[in-house]
Length: 183
Image 1 (cartoon, helix red, strand yellow):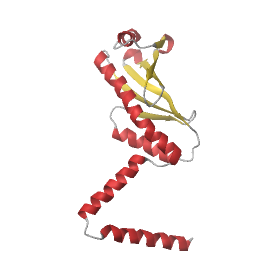
Image 2 (cartoon, helix red, strand yellow):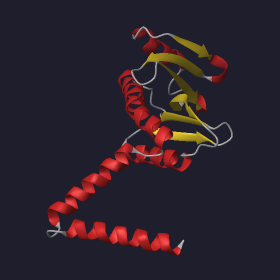
Image 3 (cartoon, helix red, strand yellow):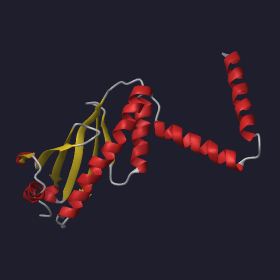
Image 4 (cartoon, helix red, strand yellow):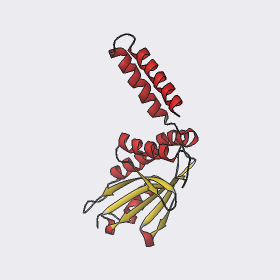
C-alpha cells in the first residue's frame, strides 16, 4: 500500500493538529485556523487502497441560483488557471463549491514534506482567493479582472500614438449612442 491513514495521523500528531478519523471511509477531517475563514475544515481522503490522496475544503461557497453565477464561475476558472495544484469543484446538485488537491501516489508513500506542502498550499491559496470570491458574489465584478483591464489600457497608452485612447473612448461612446437609438 502506498499510504495509510496511520501515516497521515503521524504527520498530524507531529504538528499537534486536532482531527477526527473516519476509518470506514478512509478519511481524516482536520480543523485549521485561517485568516480568510475562521475555521477551515480540511478533509484528507485516501482512495484506491492508499494509491490516491485527496485533500479538500468542503462547502467554501454554497449557491444554486445566484445573480452573479456566471461571474463566480468565471472567477473560479481564472483562479484555477492562475494557481498550480489547486482544483476548484462545483456540485450542481448540492450547490457546493470546494477546493482541493489530488495526488496520485501509486506505489510511493506520501512523504511528510509533500503532505505539508499540499496542506500549506491549500490553506494559503484558499485564503488568498476567498476575499476575491466574496467580492464577486457581492458585486458581480472580479477585482483582478478589472486590474487586468486597467493594465491593458496602460500598456496600450504607452505604445499607441498620442490621442489614440481618446479616439477609442469617442468610438465607444458613439457606438453606445447608436445602440440606445436602435432599442
